[in-house]
Image (cartoon, rainbow, N blue to C red; front, side, top):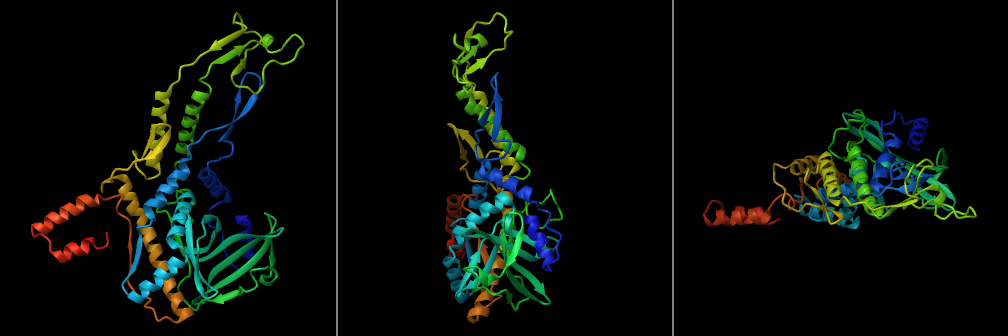
Length: 438
């Protein structure tokens, strides 16, 4: 469908060559995020008579990794601060009205999974609303040095037995941005243009909106990882895009661990002549893995032989931990981020030192996120002035305070600063300034 949307946009006069992000690649990342990868989590085992379909047990580490990155980058302690009180109240109100920090946390998880996310503000019914599309609904049209200037945003809608695709296209028209609202009916493969007035809920949306501004009205947010799969693409890379082998390894090790208990029960080797009664009726369920049918020429083996295996729990535990260490390292979380204990995966809770892999990677990803949040704040200020004539300072300085509690030992730092205050190394005002926001 992604290629079909690009083709349709070309027909409508929006030149583009696609963004290089194939639908197959996004689908692969999505399947790992959902924990159900075709031809991997379903597999077959030969039991001597037939191939039995099995379901591979998985740890769901792709989802877990994305959750952890979302909580590291965007949690309830993140604050967006502006230097003006009126500007601060306005931004706080818009963010609160859109449940921004809840939605942004979810979007950061999607961004980690699929590489790219977006914030698209709009004014509807006298209110500023923020849309949060993930990578599957983001279609860059033109860009330079990775900075997207024109972009389309797609979202699916279902009305009765009709499948609709809504496209919002932000593009430059001369010195200003224009937004085109397009609606299509789709069968999953083809797109047929329909008028906005023909679909309930879209009749009040204008086909064209002139923003009157030279600045773009959307923000793209990416993981700060070089896209080695397609360096020319402006789209980001999944945080686990280069760790698929490690994800497979972790699930293979865990599946083997689970099967160690399933198959560790007593196995029964059976000669063919013992599988049927005197009338030829089968005595055993052909799908039962506990029984293994020996070949006809099995020699002097007993007709029925019991096998009792010793469980290799220690070896599996070590193997799973090795896989988790490699996976955490490849996904930027560090080698010791996950521990496999008592049959489940736990996250390390120790304070992260400034020299750790995770500390450096958190700071690295915050660079892109901070720029995105500042740009979003600027767009909201402009919308406030353009649509509500609020007289807001659009050049107000914006500061993003990220949550450092996980990467700093604040109790230790507080005790140190108290000691410095007592010794007169720092004054009361400096001490107050350091801790009033922590």
